[in-house]
Image 1 (cartoon, one colour):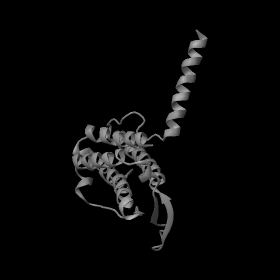
Image 2 (tube, rainbow, N blue to C red):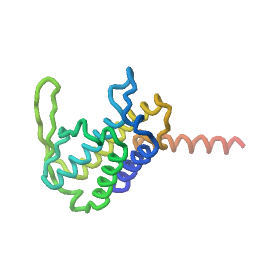
Image 3 (spheres, one colour):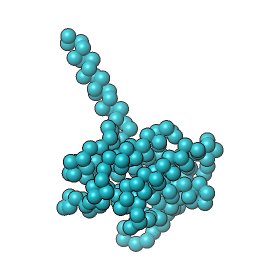
Length: 178
């Protein structure tokens, strides 16, 4: 699990190393209402909430750092990703198994907060899946900006497996036709 989380964060880091600050902060309207920087900040906020949750025993993904420098400066985001990666790399099995409380708003019409019991491992899987989901949106922004993204960027692990299997089937069918 640790390795897969580090892969996800490395994808984001590699992408950030490849774009300019103007690409990072641009809002490609009318198709998008958020910049790459806002998506990256949102991803990082989730990981930071989880890091905090290990100490406080409560994860609250609704704590956001909107408008901070991390949204406007790719290098600040890279530094945050590096800190998160280091934290994940140092998690022990005991840390992963730790039971914590998840607190989250569940209504768009009024403030309704629900709490649940969960674990650091479960929430780490969620944070990774959430990051991949936002990477998919970033990939669409990158496409509109005519910039490149890393291979499998924004592709769910199960989808990546499906793609690899299809490629293998295609190779095998070409080989058997020869």
